[in-house]
Length: 136
Image (cartoon, rainbow, N blue to C red; front, side, top):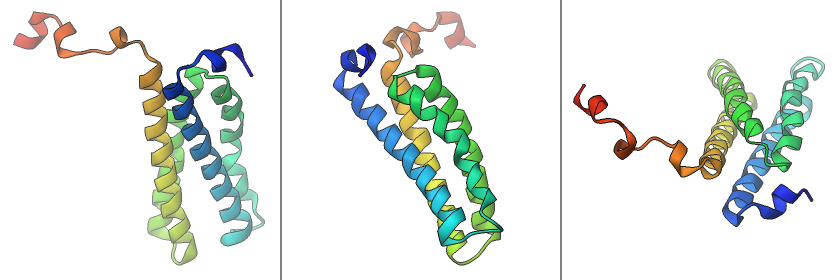
């Protein structure tokens, strides 16, 4: 276990664990969908989950930039799920809806983790803004 993982506060470790579980669930859903549950073609669409796998190493090391990258990358899966949920039917439509839900959950968990890790002074609050911005 890395030293940073040992020193992380319990809330940060729990948040990281939730993000990792959501990421693995999204990967499992993508693989099961394209290989077993509602395959399209020869299963080559299962490769769509490959960009998610390298993120796991950075998450396990509490790399903040990995969580930021994940919060951006996840929108590709939301978009794909929305398109397929509205253009396909049957089991594929339900799987696409599940992908959207999992991807949005992953985004929300990443944002939560990032907010836990950022120092409080880095967040903007109304008290920290200059008076000239309030008047405009």
